Amino acid sequence: MSNLGGGGAGSTRQNIYRSSTLGDSLQEAIKDLRAQYPDEISEDLAGMIMADFDRVVAEKFRELPATQSSAFKVKLHGNCKSYNNCDDVWKFMLNQCEIKGELVHVTSEACNIIAMEAATKENEVRKEAPKKAKPGNGGGGGYQNYRGGNRNRGSNGFKQRGGRR
Image (tube, rainbow, N blue to C red; front, side, top):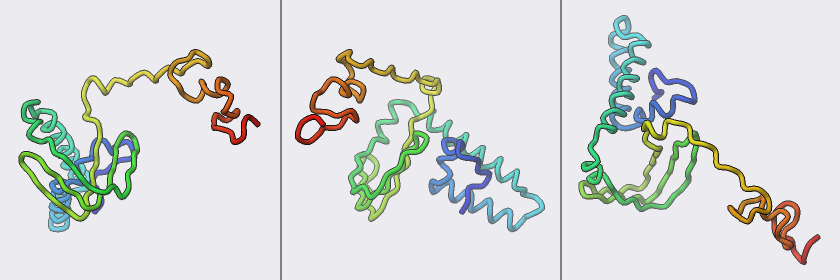
């Protein structure tokens, strides 16, 4: 089912909870209501409902006290089938999953995990890009430091066979 009121590529962070069981159920209910009452529930109203859902779910997670967050800590074991990172949103597809915590113990043949950094005032401010190491300064490692400083490496930075070529 498509995300009602979905946006462009930048909206991933806002509507991440729409693919949850609760979000899917809400979208299905809205779809059914729109089919039953097409004149009363417009596409715009459906989009507004989903936008409110996104906002409220994110707010409620932020309101959880730090003392309660330890109750939600779990250990996850599984075989990683694939992973992807796009716009700081990590997606993992796992096989033979086991999730253990104080309140839950679940096993499953397959599991999809979507993880992202929580939006806070501190990390909403764009962080400075790390400063590049200057060639020959001896610190930081990196490509620039071993282009000219290591006799076993060629101009491309990779080790050469049989000495320098």
